[in-house]
Amino acid sequence: MRTAVLILGVIAMIMNLSQSISARFGGKFLEEPSLFHGGNAGALISIAMGVASIMALFKPFISMVIFAVAGIVSVVLGIFMDYYEMIFWGVISLALAGLCYSARKEVPSPESYEESISEDFIKKL
Image (cartoon, rainbow, N blue to C red; front, side):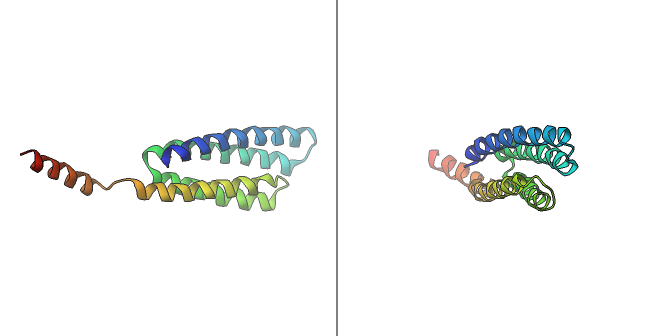
């Protein structure tokens, strides 16, 4: 599950980053400040999604928090700016946060790992 979050998150990051950079340049050339700032915010959200995707392999809980914060900020910014695709990327980020939540449950606790080692050791004796 963590590998799937990594792959999906990186794909979403690349798509969001390219779209945000296009919106940023479009806003600058069309002299639309709201679209320009929306593109900047989208680029920052996509970088946060990339960091959270990488963190999903090692720390799924931290990744879940980053995805959730990025998703909420993205939805709020998408409502108030002319860059409405931010709402879509916010929903995608929240869905990835849900996947990280389920991946967090898959990580074995250190106690269960120690118990399995001690049981295997006792069986070998």
